[in-house]
Length: 111
Length: 121
Image (cartoon, rainbow over all chains, first blue to last red):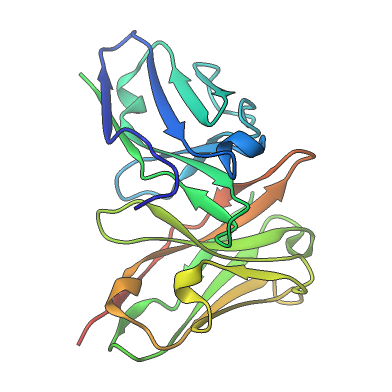
């Protein structure tokens, strides 16, 4: 069982917006601005999409945005495109012995 | 261009050992924390271990403590993961990742393509 809880799947139609949640505790997501998000296409390595809760690395589309409220972080993708179909993982530092944790992952389907 | 290339994966029997390597290029390797992250078949990502720039600090997920050792050779721009007493549950694709730290947090900004470790008799 992952330390961070994500929905197993979300879906949306091209052009729509979707939000993926990542719920933790005050020992991880809620206690630190240490949330990052990764996109992974099948058979490929993960790619950093968001860091420091809401910052985008150079080259990542501004259709991707991040936020946090309490113990829950969120990744929003606007103007959905077919190429956005992938698995998405959140990550956070944790003050438990594990040091860093990932969410269980969310499969995004573009209908 | 930042590149991370893993090697050393393969099939190993339970209780056996394997050493993974990650060759880094395109950046000043000695300036970054480095990490290993794994992904079991059909499963999610799991952080495995981190190592500080000079190797003075190392951190492990509980499930591998005492069995895995992360190390680095800054002269060779290389990261390693020595895996002993391997178990079936260690079967996964192992990714080498560069860990970059901002003023607020740390995150993995570059990943290798991964190397598959299969533990089976």
